[in-house]
Image 1 (cartoon, rainbow, N blue to C red):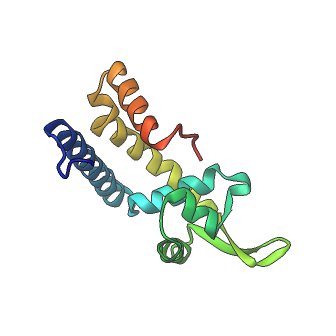
Image 2 (image 1 turned 135 degrees about the horizontal axis):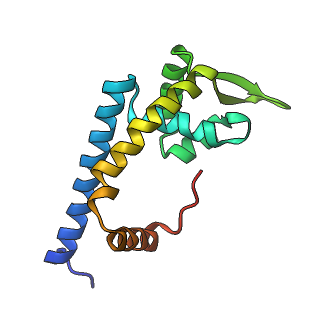
Length: 151
C-alpha cells in the first residue's frame, strides 16, 4: 500500500514544479500583456497557427495543441477574431468543421511578441540554469510526459 504522505524530497520536487510553472508563466503573461496587449494563451494560439500548414487548424486541433478546453478555445478564438488577429472559416470539404486561420495582423503581432516572449523565457527560465541543468530538467520532464515534438 502506498504511503498517504509524500516524503520531504517528493514534496519539494512537486511544489517546486508548481511554483516554477506559476511564476514563470505569470511573468511571461504580464510581459506579453504590457508590451503587446495579448495574454500568454493568446500568444500560444497565434504561435500554433503560425506553425500549422497554411497557418490554419481546426478548433479541435487547436484545443488539443494548446491544452485548453474546447469551450476555452472557442472563447479565446472569439477574442482573437474580434481583434482581427485570426479568421474563422469552414474547412474545405467539411463545412461542419471550423478552421482558425492566422491573419496578416496576427502574424505581425506574433513576430513582434516573439522577441519579448523568447527574451522572457531566457530571463526567467533557461538563463537561470546551466546547460547541464537544462538537460536534466528536460530529461526528467520527458520521463513524465514523454518526448515532445514542437507543434
